Structure formats: C-alpha cells, structure tokens
Amino acid sequence: MEGSGGELAIMEVRDGSPLSKMSVVEDSFCVREATEITVKKKYRGFFLKQRYEVLDVNSDLLLQVDGSSLDVRKKRVMRDAAGSPILTMRQKIDLITLRHRWMVHRGKSSEEKDLIFGVRRSHPLDMKPRLDVFIPININQHISSFQLVGSHINNSCKVYKGDTIIAEVINVYPRSNFSHWTESFKVKMNAGVDYVFIVTLLVILTVNDYI
Image (cartoon, rainbow, N blue to C red; front, side):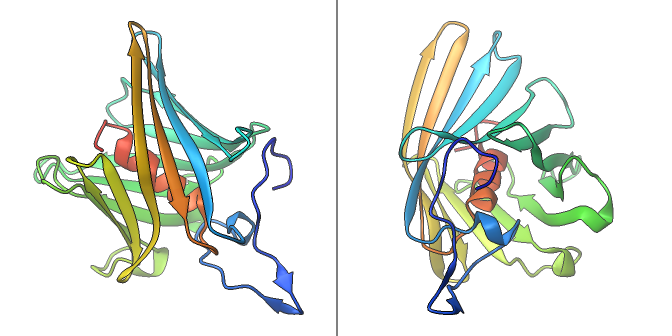
C-alpha cells in the first residue's frame, strides 16, 4: 500500500488474470491471501479521545482512526499510516427506534457522490449485535450486501457475504489502567477481502463498546 508504514499482500494479477477481489472501498485494499491484522482501540485523557490503530503481522502501522468520545453525532476519520484521509464515518440516530445508521464517504467528504456505503445497526438491546451494509445502489432499499453478526458472550463477530464468512474477530484482549484503556482485536480475513472495509465495520460496531 503506497504511502503506508506497513504492508499487506495486496491483490494482483497472476498469469495475466486478475485474482478474485471483494472490493468495497478500493481494489488496492484487497488482500491477496488469507491475512490476520490487529486492531487496537485506545482511550486517552479520561475517555475523552478514542483512537484505533491497525497493525499488520509485523506490528507495522497500516491505518489509524480518531474521534471524540463525547460527540452526540459521532464521526470517525480513517487515515493511512502517513496521515492521509481514506474515509469518514458519520453516525445518525433514529430517536424513535434508537437504531444507529452510519454513512461512509471517501476522504473527508459528506457529499452523496462520494458515498461508499451505508450501515444500519441493530437495536442496542439486541442479544446479537448486527450490522447490515448497503451499497449506494441499494441504500434506500432493504437488501443488504454484507452482514456483520456479533456475540456478547464470545466477544467476537463475523462478517458475511450471503452465507459465506469473509472475516471474523478471533480474539479480544482488554487491558486498562486508570486514564488509559485499550482493547486489542485480532481480525482474520479471507483472500480477496477489502481490509479497510472490514476495519470500518469493526470501528462502527465497537465505537460504543458494542462487542
């Protein structure tokens, strides 16, 4: 990945034929082979600031996500290791159903033409947290292209494309000390999966300590 400190095995052409990709954000973010990454969620300054760091298997920084924990309308900006914005996540809450919706745009844009996908989150009291992902062509319909299903009991989640699991959180390591608090998620992805997309879903799921 150009301009980043870490490197993943990104999808490429072999023998003149492109390998299968499951691109959502960008083709260049699709991993070439089954891959594990670590996502660290940190709080600083008595929980006032929230930060995610995404590391490859060599602990090199791939992505970073920042935002305030106090904003009613949450916004998270994802950047590459060099600090360039990749996408922005913005939350909207339905005050009647209490369901959370997120809109994800390229860079720091909020314009419709830069919309990548939308996410509908399950009710906070649901036993199994769930995210339904809608690409722009289906954004106002009830047909989700991907689904993330979590488990409070196992502190885990899986991302589905139809009936196929394409990624899953396989470990969670919580650690805390007074004003510093950290969770570390180990994420396993299949070959061809867009790792920026998967990390975006994990941020949306856990931004309110949902997993």
